[in-house]
Image (cartoon, rainbow, N blue to C red; front, side):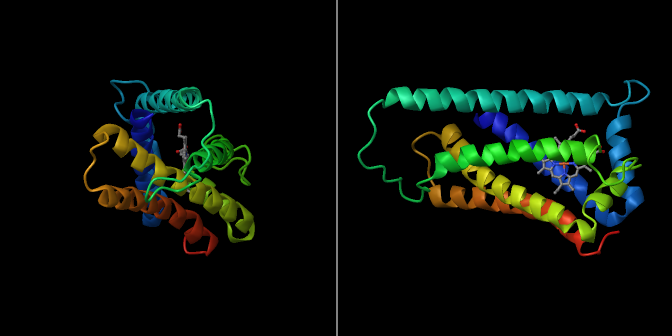
Length: 212
Ligand code: HEM
C-alpha cells in the first residue's frame, strides 16, 4: 500500500509541476506535452516513455486497491468482536478509515471524468481541442465555473486522502518506534497542501481569466 501510494504521489508531483507550464504560455505547455510523447525518438517509438509511465501508474493503482481490500479484510478478521469504545490515538482523526474509502471513490470518479475531459477530450467543450493548452483553457472557461468547482472539490478529497495516506506510509516504513511524530504529520500535511494548491491554481487562473 505504502510503495504504490508513494509511486502515485511521485506521479502527482510530476503532473502538477508539468501543469504549471501553462503559466509560461501555450507554446511552453504544448512543447512539454509533445516532449513527453517524443522522448527517446527516433531510437524508441513515439509515446514510449508515456506508456511506461501509464503501465506503472495502472499497476500502482491496481496494487493500491488490492492492498486496501486485503488490509480491510485483515482488520475485520483480527477483531471480529466490535470495540465498545473506539477512541482514536492522539492526533488521529476518528473517521480516518471511512474518509479514506469515500475519498478514494471520489478520486476514482474524478480521474474517469478527467481522462474523458483532458486526455480523450470527449466531454471537453471543444470537441477537436487541438492541444493540451487549448483543452485546459476550454474546460475551465469562466462560464463553465461548475467544472472548476467540481475539480476543486475533488482536489479537496485528494488532499485529505494524501495527508492521511502519506502519514500512514511513513508509519509503515518507520515502524512503531517512529520519532518526530508531530513533525512527520506536518510533513504529510505540507506535501498534501503543496500538491493540492499546485493543481488548484490552474483551474482557478483560467476561471478568473488570468490564463486564456
Ligand atoms: C486540476 C488540475 C489538473 C489539470 C489542469 C490536469 C491536466 C491534465 C491534462 C491537460 C492532461 C492531458 C495531457 C495530454 O494529453 O497531453 C492530463 C492527463 C492526466 N491527468 Fe491530469 N490534471 C489535473 C489534475 C489531475 C489529478 C488530481 C490527477 C490524479 C488524481 C490527474 C491524473 C491524470 C492522468 C492519470 C492523466 C492521463 C495521463 C496519460 O496517460 O496521458 N490529473 N491532466
